[in-house]
Length: 338
Image 1 (cartoon, helix red, strand yellow):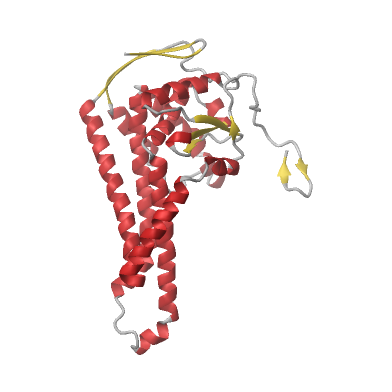
Image 2 (tube, rainbow, N blue to C red):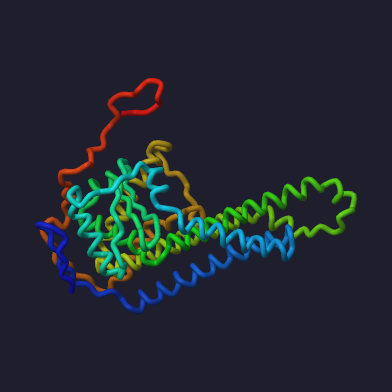
């Protein structure tokens, strides 16, 4: 039983039991998948480097990978935030949101809670950037206004789980490895093309067919492993979010709402009377129905005592947050809507 104060007029009392055996099995499976996919990505990179330059190529690929990772891990989150026109969300603007972040960060064992930033977009989205020491959680205008407090808490718990598990570093490793694999593959194929006359004349001896095939498919294999790793980390973040909130139904409801409102938006625009096929191998996030099935399977028995305002939208105070609406006019020559 947990007793959590989330703000003025909002009080949660949650009584829940999570199936410990299933939770442990899921955590072990996710961890095994993470290690296998990360190791496979690194092995693919080193294989491409070996095919191009032999052992010295492996050494240089290792040095290049370590350098790129250090740079990626130390990039200030403000560089990413500028791309989204994000800005800090002060406590007086969204007091309930700040209390939720502080409470969940304490449960997750973080030394300091991530700062909350606002993205002026009607899309319903949330994402985390930075490192544990200076993590930032961005929420869009559409997410704040479109979810209930219970659903918003579940989404924030999911993003905090990514921060606590260092998933940002894991995905940076996957991204750097995949990019370097693509570059080495391209260099190897260019080298083969430039030496094609000599190869046909037999001057370069026996060219390994397997090596050529590996260089051809390496970028695709690397990309698929990166996507699979992303899906695995999403499953693990769902599990950790349920542990933080003790509310699997809340996270399931939030995911279903995001899928219903946001996930179908582009399909409705592009294909009004049908569905756009989205193969599971090409998803950055797992299928929503499968995520919900796994989340609900965690609850051995769950009872909720609702609190006042549990299903109401968050309260937005006097703040910098504007109501996002349609553009009013366009400044000619500038190409921007205002």
